[in-house]
Figure 1: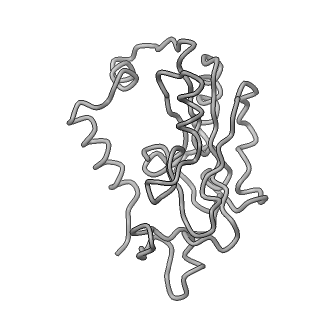
Figure 2 (figure 1 turned 180 degrees about the horizontal axis):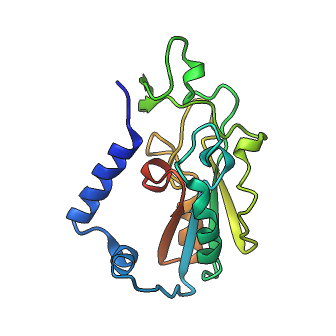
Figure 3 (figure 1 turned 30 degrees about the vertical axis):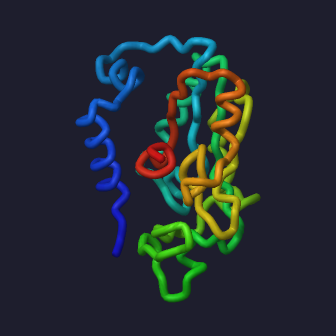
Length: 193
């Protein structure tokens, strides 16, 4: 079985909109309104990394075009958190770690079905670095995810088992943030999760 990320996104986004779960930001965006973030709002910038940019190991088409917009949006927020995919070499989510498997096939793991990816965002490699034009000096925290060798992580809040927290939920709660706004790459996986 193979997974098409774009079809997955279309289904998820369509379901959210149909269910009326777009929320304050989604409604404002759809109406073309500008949102003025409050002091209790935080922007979560998700995985704006070289491997998700054209030319990277797992590129998002025209992903580099979002970088200036992300920079602009981030200047409007007092509070910004960034996420960074941060895989170990030979990570369990990589097709290369499963002999005979190819990228985008799936396999069953202890925590459920895992899409097998090309090697990407390996710790300490240029592919794991944030895009060179990403300028967010006001970022307060970087959450690194996917660093556990035997478990993937798309969400900034929980590992792929849906139980192991990254610590972000506690940070958001402890800081008293009321709204989390999202922007980033790999919308169909990391941003959506």
